[in-house]
Image (cartoon, rainbow, N blue to C red; front, side):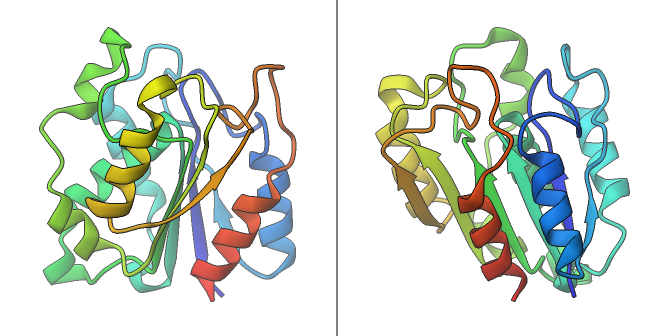
Length: 190
C-alpha cells in the first residue's frame, strides 16, 4: 500500500473539513496516511511549510501520493519543484484540490509563489498528476479557467472540474466528506 501525505490549506488544520474523513477511508483501505500540522496556518511561512512537508514525506517517493488543498497544493507544487527526482525518483502521484497556479490577490501569500514554478521539473517529480477544482471556486474566481488550463497544460494533470463545490469547502463553511478526492487518490495509489 501507499503512503498518502495530505497538506491542509491556509488557516486550517488536520482536523478541519474533509481531511479526517479522507484519512479514515484511506487508512481503512490499508494506506499509511500522514496529515502534518503545518506551522502557523493563519500566517504561514513557505519555508516552514516546506520543511514540515519534507519531514512528512519520509517514505520512498515511488510509494507516496501527495495531496494538497488550497495553499497546501501550492506547498505540494513547491515540494515537487525542489525534489531531487534524479537522485530519489519521482513520487507516485500528486492530487491538488482547489489550488492555484499563480497569485490570487492575497499579498501575504505571495512568497509561496516565488520563485516561479519549474513546470517541467514538477511534472517529472510526480509520475501521475490530478487536479480537483470547482467552477465556482471563489478564491480563483473569474480566473478559474486560466488556473484549470495551466493545471492541464503546465502541470500536465488530468483535471476533474465540478460545476459547484466552491473552494472545497463551499461558502457555507465546511465540507466533511469529499468523495471526488477519495476516488482520485485511490486511482493514484493504485
